Amino acid sequence: MIASGTLAIMGTKEAKEVMQAALGRAKADLVIVNAKLANVYTGELLDDFAVAVKGKWIAYVGKEPQDNIGEETVVIDAAGMTVIPGFIDGHTHLTHMYDAAEFSRYVIKGGTTTIIAETMEVFPIGGYEGVLDFLESFREQPLKFYGTIPVMISISRTCNGISVETIQKLLLRDDILGLGESYWQAVLQNPDQLLPLYEETLRCGKTVEGHSAGAGGRKLMAYTATGVSSCHEPITAEEVLERLRLGIYVMVREGSIRRELDAVSRLKDMDVDLRRLILVTDGIDSKDLLERGYMEYIVQKAIDVGFDPMDAVQMATINVAEHFSLDGILGGIAPGKYADMVIIPDLKTVRPEYVISNGKIAAKKGDVLVSPRKSVYTEASRHSVHLPAEFKPEDFSLIIDTGVSSIKVRVINLVTELVTKELKIDMPVTDGEINADLDQDIIKVAAIDRTHCPGRKF
Image (cartoon, rainbow, N blue to C red; front, top):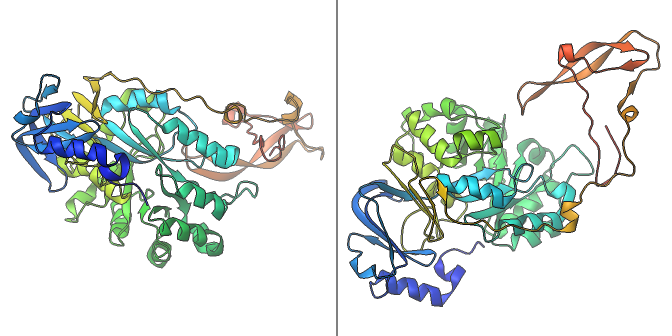
């Protein structure tokens, strides 16, 4: 099970300190006063509230903070601004683009205080030890990072599958929240391979993350019956609604891979409960991160396309926490929860003035005030490319021995950065070789195994 609550994580000593502060018998380390408080549990916006923090934890929420304020207490006068919980990105991919420490610098200033990342990119190269190294880089950062276990569904035989024994070891970790996204077709086609992984995960009280793109009706129901409890693939309001009606938490993407908020926004007019709707990035590239920001941009866009501001905040805080059974420690502003908060001008304007993470002021007006921990990766992670010899240009020549002047070839049409389509095109053969054709925007691509059969190429 996931450690949940002050006692489970910090023990009785710190819990008693938080209790004393809650009772007004101990001074707080930090107090926010004169704030409007967004209560994501009830959907209320409460005027003239204060929040007192002891260590990493919220101790008091109310209108009488005087007993918590001492000479050494840091006091933030919100002056009528709104305090909301820190944002949570419930589904993203980091390993192929970012180091956790450097990524932290850019996302925390926008109010994101918790990130849940897939580890599927690490496992095919680094295996179990590689995933551990990746998780180690998450530790002791200014924001909280969690991971999910890679299911390793692949058309590549060398990369397909993960053992139950590996799953069991990873599930023992508190920084692992569940089993990562698994494609519905594979689950329905190979239940004997995948259901034992689901069973182990659910026995541990952790989640099974879904990937139901294209599924509907009975196929979606069969997939849901396995214990899958989320999906980040719906692209229309109707697809979202179908999944919500089955009890699935639906993650709406607005990152660099896909952007569905505009299409899904019609859901706001359908008079349905949105507490199982979640906002996620599903990965964001450096250009979008620098130009738009992170979760703060997505929450603001949800408001701009017509979602109620409180609903939008809930979709990036408590809804995510409840899905991953983290609501005992984060996702809302209440005693015994991590002191992860964002002060914004008002509920419709997601422009962080202060970001508080783990009880510390992490950013003020866009300036980061905390230093991420630089992780030193293992030798194996830093030297993961193993090739038998140096490649030469002729290794990538496409030689045709038939003596023809042209030949029909299969071409991958990149419809989007994510979606591809097979084309068959006549290509000229020059001196017995097929060359790239820049006029038609056709180039060569090679896949080279660097781990399992080093040097094997396709």
